[in-house]
Length: 294
Image (cartoon, rainbow, N blue to C red):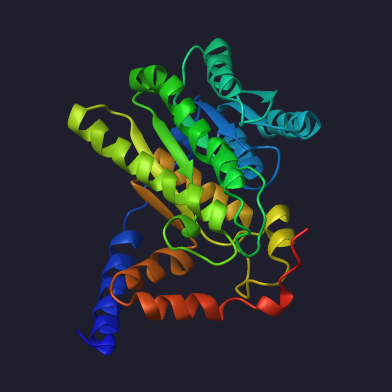
């Protein structure tokens, strides 16, 4: 099939997907009222904004991240915004004992769990891969194994509540992107683990939904500071992104794409015209702005 034919088929698929996607949206904030929710990576960025949305919806919230002072401020604001209750527990997700402890703290505080939102990530660089496989291994511990650990620990509670697992991933977990080899590796792994787990839940008739969130470049402080003008597309608002993630989890969607035009639509080209997609992606980078790796 010629490139033109492939692109034509992809465009038809885009229109069909957009039509189907836009017609499926029945979210009501009341769906989260009184729900017991854990949010990781919630001291800043998207996680922080999710905590605020959940607070306004009247949820019980337990948040976690590394920095206690930041968590304390987020919890204080959640209480003011109307959270049914709000707590925090600081620690690092490179420790699987701590990952389990977060879930057990949720059980102690709430007596159960309705939604587990996995959003935390470990530090990595934005540059050409330097060959450090140990860094990839360490990042897998934080970005993948702690997600799996928390999910396994939370499953007994989620099965009782017919709850939700919400996994924040990335476009870099669907398409390999330059300067993100360690990060992209972990996000692809999340897709494999949780997509397979979802299928097993269906086979076993386990009524726990798994929502994988494929997000684009978002205007968090860490992301904006990291890419430093290398990525040419504008960053999407973290507040809106956070809300779309929550909505997707509550609606038990299989996958959430935000922003849709920057994630799902390019993915429709991935299998039909992969080289064309690669060229489009590379056009979005200005390598002259790439910082020297420290």
